[in-house]
Structure formats: structure tokens, C-alpha cells
Image 1: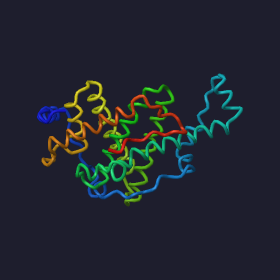
Image 2: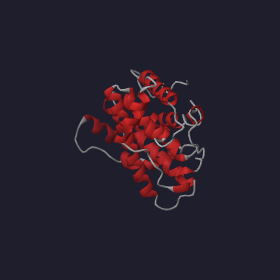
Image 3: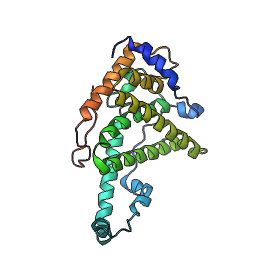
Length: 244
């Protein structure tokens, strides 16, 4: 990406607005480093999915009925695998690539959320190419994100409007995913930079330089290239992000 593309990226930004916090000081507070829920907690969260047994008399559903514990064990393995994948995405803000320090981002829950969504998008872009199981894994990672958000907000002292906040975050999530998809599908660094400028850096932040955008676009492209072609469904060999 050329430095001159910053002007085009800013011009493209009129197509979307920078994400704003709707939650006051709570959402802008420094996020706590909370441990992920245990496997049992995940089982409770996803128990409705575990109870979904197809009524169609296929060999698969017959196997689920004759060996329900094996099916539940497989489901739990997928949930644990999604948790590991999600942790890899969520840790890139503070740990991992330490994007908080590298790009001087605001140390708050809002920035953490945007960076985490970016990495979930990169990971899911490859998962979606790996058939029905890949798409199912995308849903598990997304479900883990929602569970983690609920835990973080609760630990931060939020006791009211959790449903409203979660609903708004889901809308923000899908809006950002669509923006990144557009940049990827068009193969345009300027469009991708515009999405990153709006969502990661906040378009109203005058301290963001062209060099910052160039580095972030390069970072995203390198990570996408690293994940391309990898089997992200191998439960025994989880794939993470490159440390740059």
C-alpha cells in the first residue's frame, strides 16, 4: 500500500462511520484479563446445540442416537478447539503481537473488541473455505466471543442492559466483518485501509498516520497469507497467528 492511498482511504471512509462507544466509562474502562470459562461452563452455554438431534433417519442421526456420549464428546472437542482459536484471536491485543503497544491504541474494552473482531475475521475467512465443518467452527468461535463479552462486562460491574449492549455489539461485529470482506474481495488496500481506519484507529483520530495504516494493512495481509491453505479444523494441531 502506498502512503498516498491514505487520502483515498479517508475519502472512502464517508461510506461508513467510525464505531462509537455507546456504553460510557464502562466500555472505555481497561478490560480485565479474565480467564476463559472451563469446558463445563461451555457445555452449559451450548447445551441447546447438544440437544439438537436430527429426526431424519440417516446413518448420522442413527449414530447419534445409538452413541450419544460419543457425539457429545465430539461436540465438546469442537467447542474446546473453538475456544483455543478464539483465545488466539483475543490475545493479540495485549499479548501475542501486542497491537496495543505497536499502534498506540486506546487501552480499553472497545479497542480490545475491535482488534479481536479483526482477528476473528481473518481466522474465519479461512474457516469458511473448509466446508460445513468450517462454517460450524465459525459459529462456535462467534459464540465464544459473545460468552467472553458477557463475562467481561459482568466482571466490569455491568448489571443492567446486558442484552441491549450485546445486541449492539453483534451489529458492530457484522458491520466490521462486511467492511473487511469488501476490502478482501475487491483486493483493494485502500478499501481495507478505510475499514481499518474506521474500526481500529477511529476515523476522528488525527494522530493516525499513513505509516500506521500501511503497517496495519501489511500486518493483515501477512496474517491472511499465513492462514491461507492451513487446515484449521485439525483438532490436534491448532493454527495460530504469526508473531510479527
